[in-house]
Image (cartoon, rainbow, N blue to C red):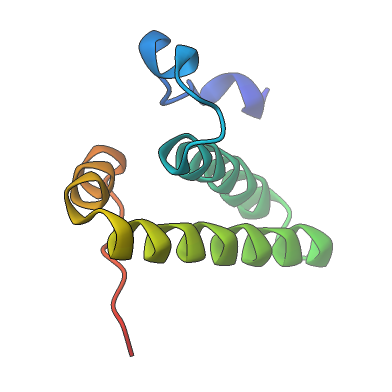
Length: 90
């Protein structure tokens, strides 16, 4: 089963933290993105899942932009921890 292949990135101490924090939300969006990406590798024509993936990517991008403006140190730490590319402004 595909769901069992992904182990959550969240550590035990992060689960105890505030679930409304920007970091927690970005981590949960990243987990959803990984699950949807693996689903779309199997089901290439699933247009509703593609739309959902694009929506989640946009939400994560907006949260990362907010975090980069508010606290650059936390932003850099989160980017390095999740191993995702840094957001570039236009």
